[in-house]
Image 1 (cartoon, rainbow, N blue to C red):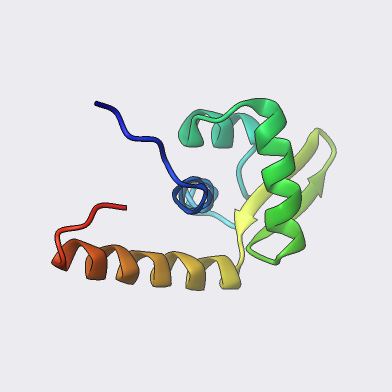
Image 2 (cartoon, rainbow, N blue to C red):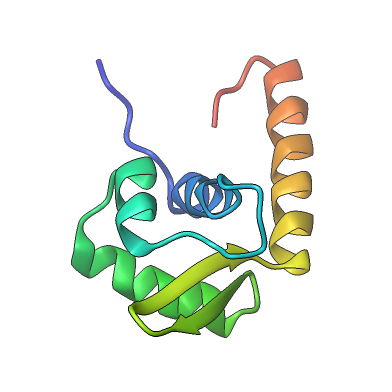
Length: 94
């Protein structure tokens, strides 16, 4: 039986995908869509929320926005990873 991902897991997937290229140039929305596996409409709403909360930075460019994980987003990913490890130690899966 397949399990649904939580909103927190999807946010973590988006933040991780936004770090993929390893440069400060950020990634495009297509890359985020493929890596996070969510619909375009949902991704647009999520990007607005993540940029608004300071977890992602939107970089305006000629061809459109690119996104990169902010310092606050990196802190979120670190805390999420620690919590995953903590839950796993009790036999839980997030």
